Length: 177
Picture 1 (cartoon, helix red, strand yellow):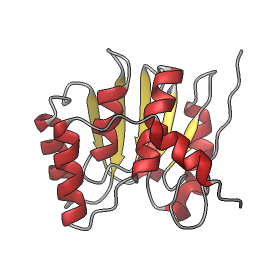
Picture 2 (cartoon, rainbow, N blue to C red):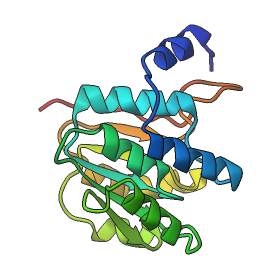
Picture 3 (tube, helix red, strand yellow):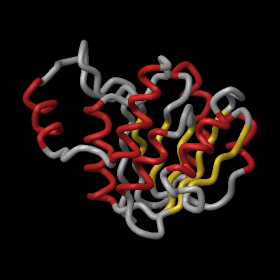
């Protein structure tokens, strides 16, 4: 893939920073070696949220809740987020971060394996952010596609990386009915 530093620079130029609570969560995650989305992906997600204005978001892979809080902060008022996490040690941290950010009413955390939870979900989502084990994406895709609303957008973590590519593992598909 071709790395276009101009694109990265442009995406980053749109970002005006995060809220103080997001800065704290990010700092703690980095200190504890918890992988969270990079600045470029944060900027890109904010841009997608501003453009698409999703009202129902699914996140597969919560970790400590950084991305869910970021989406809750920058999504339209009234947007609901459903997030799935399987790693028991991170679930209480994510819940505490949702409360700390005042987003516990906006974010629903489903505990367990996404391969078991996704088939049980009903309704459609305007945006799906896949931030779980990359090797599982292909397993999740049939259920993820079933859950998409007519305007389809999937943003996958590591879409923007500093080292080797810009849109690796990015699956974007838009269909307007």
